[in-house]
Amino acid sequence: MNRAEVARLRAATPGCASVIHFNHAGASLPSQATLDAVLAQLQREALGGPMEAADQTIQARARTAAATLLNAVPEAMAFASSGSAAWGMAFNALGPWQSGDRILIGRHEWGGNLACIARAVGAGAQLEVIPCDESGAVSVTALEQMIDPKVKLIALTWLPANGGLINPAEAIGALARQHGIPYFIDAGQALGQLPCDVEALNCDVLKGAGRKFLRGPRGTALLYIRPEFMQRLQPTQLDVLSAPWDGESFALRSDARRFETSEVSVALLAGLANALEECNGLGLANIRQRIDSLSQGLRERLTRIPGLTLHNLGPTDQQSGLIAFTLKGWDSAWLKQRLARRGINIGANSVAYTPLDMQARGLESIARIAVSYLNTEEEIELLLSSLRKLADNGGV
Image (cartoon, rainbow, N blue to C red):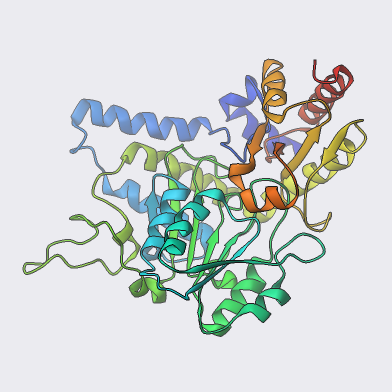
């Protein structure tokens, strides 16, 4: 991805002209075309009636683009209002949980997923954390030693929210498939940042939010269900879309839309369809190369700032565009606010986001820089300059 292409993409993104945005892991900046798609659908609804303007081709476009992104079939794709909602629906459909059932997770599991798992634990299931290897990633070797017939689920947060770690999702998937164990992947930070092939990952369920590196609207998320695994999942909530009347009874759909409802924001799906098509057009290999180049250089330069400590895990040459750090004398949330006053957006995570990992490392909070292909070297220099000045002020 050369400078001319980056300049073109930035020119097509209104937010790039008004803010320096390094919070793409929270929510990225949408393109003008994505905004136009949302607004055009809202206009059609306002002028012709919301129900009458519910064009089915928009949903078909979004589903096809989502399937293309993941190397899946459209029938395996469902949409939800958030990644956490998508994961929770799939998890709750996997039960009922019984005493002695074992659930194996990485230490870096997303807090929202842990909240869902807590109900299974309340029903008698055992939650067990897979040990990490020397780099801090989930250990595939340790996982293999933990597997027995009582393991009913392996769950992995592929790219944790609190740093640059990229967990070995493919290797874990191969092990899960070998033993016939359901495998859920939280790809919230991966989609739109890394190539994602559900066939290579060997996952049964995968979810991700539209608002992050995919640059789609808030309130959208993707849920992939492996077609051969579909019948294992019995959704806890049904309506006339997910279980339509067949003349004699309400029959559960055979595709992933068994997790959808008849009420949906077509405007948001119009924006998501455009964002997904833009991402597919750019190519994930190109996106990954650009993000990797920018983030590796930024990490190295951050280490030169006095009082700044990086908190990333994983091999230094194989990390994502998420950079976790703390700055001596500064609360992470307050640091985020001070940078925002300078027109620079970053993130700040508390323990609740990744509680097991944060507690294991003795971290109360971290500041987070999330790099996108939209960012430039000039923006990185402004970010570094601001952090140097704040470091010199010592929290003042």
